Amino acid sequence: MINPYQPLPVKILSVIQETPDTKIFRLKFLDSVKQKQFYFWQGQFAQVGLPGQGEAPFDISSNSHDSTAYFEVAIRQVGRLTQALHHLHKGDRLYVRAPLGKGWPSTDVLSQKNLLLVGGGCGFLALKSVIEEVSLGYAKKHQVQVFYGCSDEAQVLFKERYQDWQKSGIKLKLIFDKKEPTKKYIQGISCGYGLITKLFETEKVVTHASAFLCGPPVMFKFVIKKLQERGFKDSEIYLSLERRMSCGLGVCQHCAIGDKYVCKDGPVFRYDEVKDYL
Ligand SMILES: Cc1cc2nc3c(=O)[nH]c(=O)nc-3n(C[C@H](O)[C@H](O)[C@H](O)COP(=O)(O)OP(=O)(O)OC[C@H]3O[C@@H](n4cnc5c(N)ncnc54)[C@H](O)[C@@H]3O)c2cc1C
Ligand code: FES
Image (cartoon, rainbow, N blue to C red; front, side, top):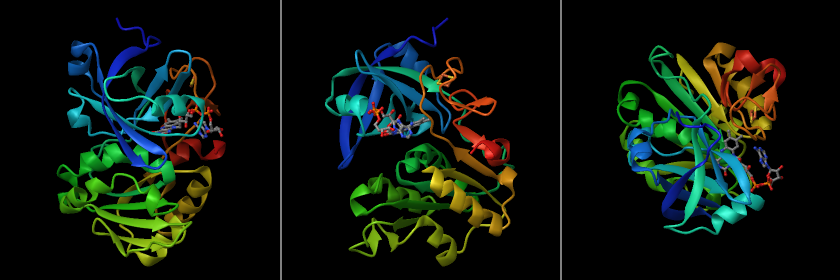
């Protein structure tokens, strides 16, 4: 049996400078059997580390259908570990424990409803794998609307995927809250200026839908209010939460909220299950 505390070595297949502070790392387990058996659910995360630098959680952002060949994490440089990770190159080795946590509910659990995905800043990373998944057919049969807010054009993530997502039926809208956009469209996606909640006024929001949210805590508060005004029940809203983590396995209590552990019971929670702890 594999020891869940044991980080396994992975090789970096590629590194892409996605935005000025975020790099996308494509990774593959050195153990080819492990890689062939590897599967993650959208919204699960990986503990990524380097000897002497510690480890930290990062959302697995690639398409889960590619998981037997590789998986990707997008890492924003904010401190000691992420700075060390940003110094790595193709061919270098790092250490991973994955997949961890519980991800977004499956579309079957949601009774095949429409979807509204709302991502703020780095929170968009937690939605990327769901977007990839629903782009493979679900978005042709159901409405999938994505609101993505970030500070400015330079911070926009995954631009090169937008045309494919659009072709798949996904309706994406971008909004910047620090600098006005210099162009109307990025890869065919219209960009607005203001807080992400503004999109609830300017866009026709999907109905008969579940909502998936990830972003800064302040965003949750205001977006949930907008959702409730539009008739979303608390049980139709799902959040991916970020907390400082250590073991990632529900043992050390670092990430406890109320009687739950973000690492083991989440990071994705149904809003009615955690609203008293937020
Ligand atoms: C479930 C989960 C998924 C995540 N997914 C991603 C991802 O896909 N990509 C990504 O870039 N980051 C992600 N993060 C955040 C990432 O784990 C932290 O940025 C990382 O731990 C920073 O390590 P560091 O040593 O570089 O920074 P530190 O030196 O530890 O911290 C630098 C700064 O970042 C703040 N910080 C560190 N961790 C967090 C956190 N969890 N929440 C809020 N602020 C924090 C610190 O307060 C400090 O101000 C995720 C976190 C969680 C819990
Ligand atoms: S990180 Fe240890 S209990 Fe969640």
